[in-house]
Length: 101
Image: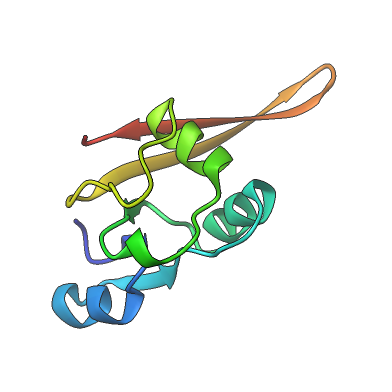
């Protein structure tokens, strides 16, 4: 990752300690609020390591993986995230581009 990348993860303190990157916790919240937090902090990577003991919004997981992974199963690697908003005639649309898994 680059020095200015922000990683969203379930153990943000440990991620920050070991990587030196800016981090933000994965919220146990709605899909809309999770995306709002990602945009607010300009999140560029996601790590679900350590998320087994918490609730992660299933709609958020489906947006990342295109399906809901089994509870307690999350990959042990970083996922590159790019959120792109586009203006359409009916309002704004959000594209979540995922690479790295």
